[in-house]
Length: 93
Image (cartoon, rainbow, N blue to C red):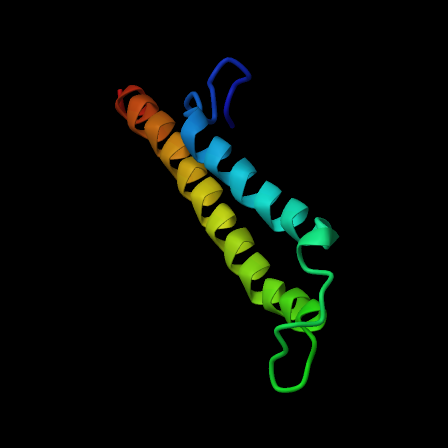
């Protein structure tokens, strides 16, 4: 059982979290800017631009969320591993 004084994670680097915030902001804000896509032309297979643009954002948003998850998970693994490496030699004594 770990004591409260032993950290479970190393300090975080801000880079992955900033990139994740930017990606998630893009996924949320761009589809909300309706004046950019509230037109009928160009149409794709008879479907107005307004509809197929929104549908195109479904896989784009999924990809952005997946990349964000991967970045945060990778950073969390790095933080946990950094603490594990530091505390392992002490536990062997």
